[in-house]
Length: 93
Image 1 (spheres, rainbow, N blue to C red):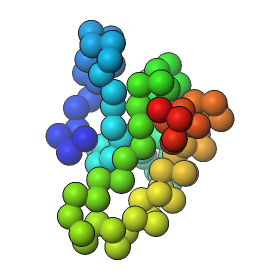
Image 2: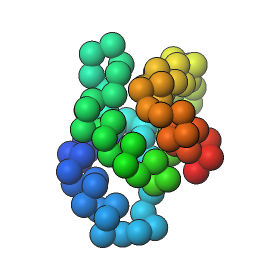
Image 3: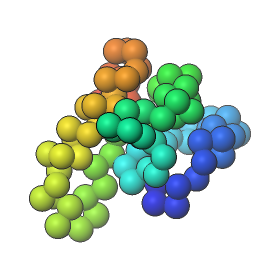
């Protein structure tokens, strides 16, 4: 996530490696204006909802202070997906 691999690269990796999963914390470009999913990411998440999980990336204790906001942001962009895809990514995967 931190490196910000373009969506096309993520798609290619997922297609090449059938058991690879994508974790969606610290993902530059995932969202745009008002925290909505960027169109390319919306298409990929809708195409492969069984291959992604929501992440909070609480890698240091200070990140826990913003946990509620991180989850609110995830709920916002998950709302851009069909309900079945959002459920898979949010907790079923």
